[in-house]
Amino acid sequence: MESHKVVIAVFTGTGNTLLMARALADELDKRGRDVSLAPMERPEKFILPKGAALGLATPLACFSTYPTAWCFLDSLPEGKGREAFFLATMGGASGGMDGPIRRVLQDKGYKPVGSLTVVMPSNYANKTLPVEKNRQRIEKSETIVRKYAGDLCAGNTTWASGGFLSPLFARLARGRRSLRLFYKFFPLAVDTAKCIGCGICHEICPEKNITLINGRSSIGKSCQSCQRCVAFCPSEAISVPGKPAERYRSVSIKDIRALLG
Ligand SMILES: Cc1cc2nc3c(=O)[nH]c(=O)nc-3n(C[C@H](O)[C@H](O)[C@H](O)COP(=O)(O)O)c2cc1C
Image (tube, rainbow, N blue to C red; front, side):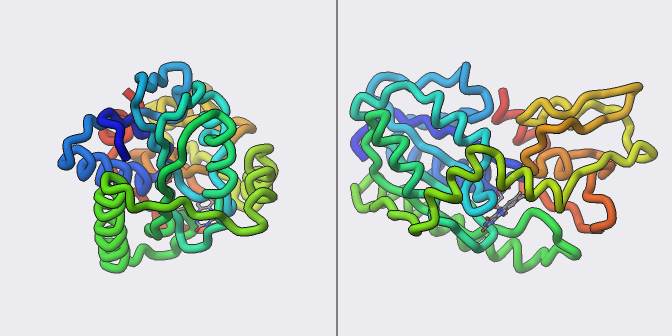
């Protein structure tokens, strides 16, 4: 990667992708790059300076990624030959979204230089959290991501091609069909007895899909199941009814706010 300036656009539900994006940024910074992070859910505020490289960091969702990330990709300015790289985090089953993402970038005139997917702790339906195993998982992936930064700077990266079903998974996620199906099986609900009406879920929902009604949170119809509200509700009032799970998050609400600006 030749660019000195780098902007990494990040989407994260429960923090895994933000953690890895920060490790990548830190390592690029150590190699003399001028790196900043930007939230994918604020495409209207996104600025990619002339000659800057574009980084994309997203979680896997339904073998693709979230509609927020796809919308961000669609909103990108023309690449004009600028370099682009990709970092994905997943629970363990990739559908190979590198391929469809590379195509969008190429069509926009970016030069794709490298992609990497790392395994992180699962962030939903954890009956119990394997705390030590998760810590080791994160540590291992961080080492891989830091090496990826070095490889990017040295021009030693490739872009994974993606599986043959990846265009289908991408189409289903872009059109929200797969995420809607997921939500059918894992719908979220607010326990109004626990809700303290603090408004944090409303503030951080990337879809602006949570409103306060009579001082209690209420979830609307356009949830993309990123689990951010579940992860950062201070009174653990949001969950999937009938499916008890231990709440997972890998960063603090302060980190999410710092990303969102
Ligand atoms: C709705 C949903 C769908 C997911 N789909 C996949 C998937 O298809 N494959 C996979 O390996 N992990 C999947 N995961 C797990 C996440 O990709 C993984 O935990 C990721 O690191 C979460 O990143 P985040 O904390 O930045 O949101 C899914 C998680 C959720 C909540």
